[in-house]
Length: 485
Image 1 (cartoon, one colour):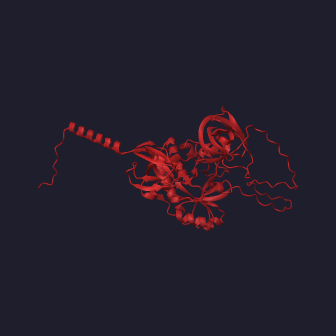
Image 2 (cartoon, rainbow, N blue to C red):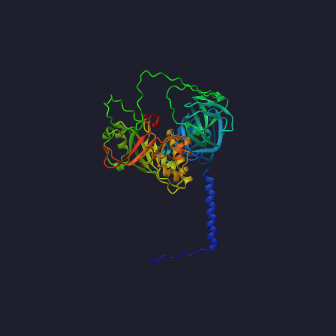
Image 3 (cartoon, helix red, strand yellow):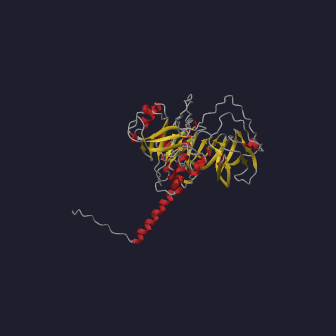
């Protein structure tokens, strides 16, 4: 018997073409009938209004993998059209064919809990969750009925008055001076409360608007705020000087001043001024084993530690470094090295991998996105990737993560956007290796907030670490505002 393969008779060309067309049409019809169609692609957070079953497919005949209680929060990747459902929720009849595609439950990914990428639940059993954040007036500011200077002013608030921001919106352009600095842009805040009191009870409207560039992230004065929003701006009273009981002048607090020797007899030394910054480091497995007790003894107060990269890499020394740095008394935070990709859902997948690995908890430094790669994405695509990543972190942790980036990268690959600074992501960790007294801060001085962390050197020497290490500063000494609540 010959082992040569017999070539089958070749079908005629018209027959082949017709068969291919019929097969393609059959596959399209089957997939159209069996697969739910996406109608929304934005990631959002929703809360269960009643007990809800989570299923493996968008139909009531699919297997139930979990049942969640009223108030449980879910992260929704998309709303899809699936099988019809009808039930009662919170005492009301609901029905429809819309289903939520859910990727996380109460901050924990579906994949890590159930071993599948998504679960599905009837959309009518959930309500949207609105995330708000706080800002403080940096100067005297008008609250208006719309995002435009031509709309009516409902009130004027004073410096350090606290507002609750429900959303950032784009309005008409403004240009003014605030706290002695120019402020301009088109970003406005939609405000729902002033000093903790709802806008509706104060002014009889659901929201008021103010130019975003006129606000800051923290109050200058920490005493109990008695300033209130007033319909008309009263003139600022002139403070009466208080007599100083001692004739000695207040010591100059400028930290940069260097003591100089004087020929006159040395007076009783005054205490050194309180430092305005705190020193720290960031590390990964490249630093190998670290003696964290020696690091703390050298005066370092905080450390950012690499936890993850892309969608699968875990730094092999992360757990050890975090435990030992905490034990040494440092403030500790984790960062994720981003590898942006055009793969659908990559940003959310990287964020999930980071949170599952780092598991940030109360008292940790805020989670960090280390942005040094573009993945060959355009400015618009990379910006959208970062928005999706940061939004996912917010959904799972309830906090706005920190962005680590260099001024040149932000300008060249992110278009020097101010969107993040004006949408709650006000903590910037800027990487600018320089001997200057201050770094260059991108994004319009990060929306007027400036830098919070500054990596000023990649060539530092720190006791307890073999080889070189990145050196950082925190712009302050009170870490409260950069810690996980």
